[in-house]
Amino acid sequence: MKDDFYDFDPFKLFKKFEKMFSDMETADRKIKSTIREPLVDVSETETEIKILVELPGVDKKDIDLEVKGNFLIIKAGISRQNKKEQKDYLCQERTYQQYYRMVPLTKDVDSKKIDAKYNNGILEIILTKKTESKKVVNKIKVK
Image: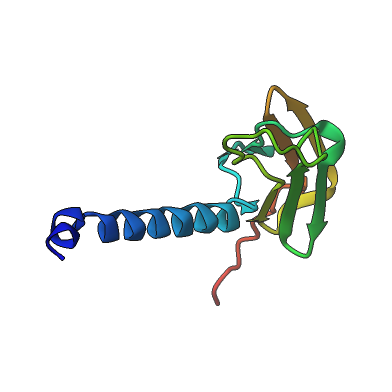
């Protein structure tokens, strides 16, 4: 009975809780990492709107762009190269990754004149603004 007291490890329970919370944190990170909103930079000139989208590791063929209403919708995905189940991993954190972003557009964007280029993980989208004839100002004489 005396030996049971000396074998008691007060930190054993703490270690179990630490492992449990660590496992939950890893699971939470995996859930949150499956769909990500890509970072964007938006700039504007008189004739166009330029959007730079950060899509690291994405293949050009896996990028989908569309204009729906007044929104530019950006979708992309990454899947692991090796889909075979390997049992020799010590840690496996990389999973399928999806990107999704809706960018609001102004009404002066011509949805038929959009150009997109992808290079080194950066998607560059150029949206041409509609050309409007100069507005004529008519003076009205007050009688």
